[in-house]
Image (cartoon, rainbow, N blue to C red):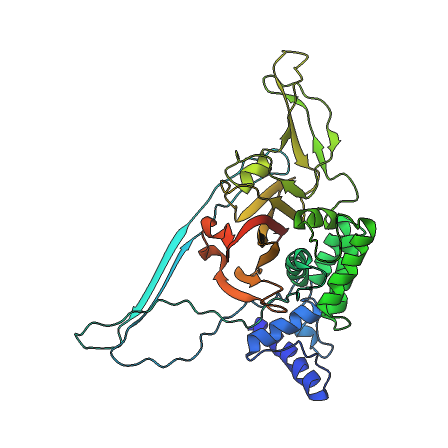
Length: 406
């Protein structure tokens, strides 16, 4: 009931702004849910209308979360003596449990199959069955339009994902972006805010950051039709301002260990071989090769790597198809459990990057700056995509997996 009152407060303000002609054109929706969701993504989930009664106001302690996407099936005429059948088969990806320092990964998986059929005819004649999955493009995440003069697909794919992450909780992610680095991410957050408030379009936000990065390294991040590596771009955007990891030399046999030292590990992890079974296992087995011997028992030494604090964003560069994409990563640190969910997948093929965005409600959206432009196409529930289906998207190969803190 309280949630309904919150939605009514926002709807009242939307109606007032529309009547006064002050509602931005991008706040659209044919139904209440997508309309309010679009308004939340513009104003932020922490925004409370000024005329809201004190008893109904929400806050950080009593938040109003971003509304989930509600998909609406279109009307259709069903002829007599025909049968319609809807089948949805799902396979969830492997979940991972990884500690910031020394926890053991936990695997979990589930498979659910839902079948629903309705016989609309009493005739004994053969009936025709049609399989279909219907999704709506209402409340699509914002997308970037491809720049064909200065190929922008690397920026389009990455920034569309980062904006969807940032827009779910603008206040929290503004802080998290700034904590990662004070340069590109801080600037990106400011550009996102201008876009959300209607002061600039999305492409202006992209081009502003692109100019910053190009100015620092015009060879690696060129203009024109030469193209840019999305892995290099992601590394530059997420480059931390300080050391974020440590490595700890220790004996594999006895209890001997050496003091921890700062490590060069950053928030983009590059797959060096295809020995790992999942992204979760990959994260849990980070270590440096060492040929040192223990000074006490002369056994082999190892040098595992761990993050000093739990990352807000973590990206895996995929070079093989033998690894499974863990649906979640869980960190344990000082008694706290923190979850990172898959929020984006970036694909490459035919000298072009595309992406899939996973919303906080688990809905998957496909974006291609060439074809979908400023919007995205719904692909349904993330839980219903098998790990195998994640490695290909419209003929392109998976190269980056983006995890973000819940």
